[in-house]
Image (cartoon, rainbow, N blue to C red; front, side):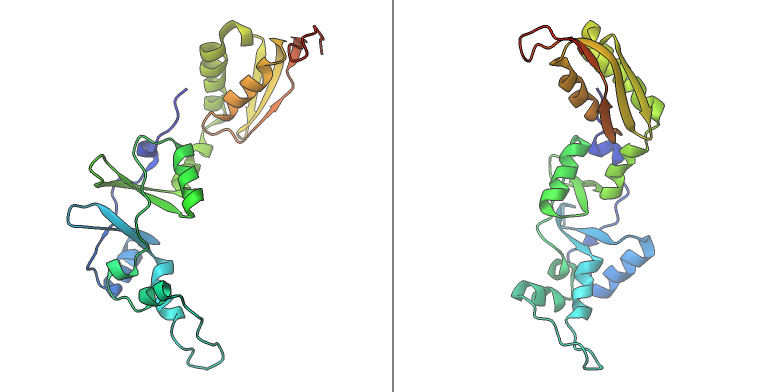
Length: 224
């Protein structure tokens, strides 16, 4: 099976900020390019952090309310340092959490979830910026056509990987939802097929209604 990689999904023409870029220039950079965050790079074009609208808004949220109705929020030392920052390297979230071009969607998505970030700069072996991948980019795999998903399951999973043992399994795909039917020789094969189908890019869910001729999980030939 061919899993889509970060390199296939990432944006290559990356808007970036230098570490000494002033606050107002960063705001203008975001607005001019219609983006909500940019990687901050050093002199060798290596990401050292990411500065986002949320980082920039700390400056406004840390200021006193002119009406006096809303108290100034308590800020940790690092939050106050950001609120008082004037350049990209003082405002950014660091270090940069980066991905590699050869990573799969699953690897990138897991890192985003663990690190609680919305985007990942993509770097090469020398840690130089090659692109950026966002949550929206990763979700593009779910735009795959149903017939493409079905062809991959029948061709790569059932025939290519499993072979004759899965020759009687049928596949239907609607809106990314896979329905498996037909039959197999032994019951233990069913969860294997289901797991492989779930790993196909673009699959939303898998429902199986596959019959088996022998229940090898109990060691007794029971049909269903």
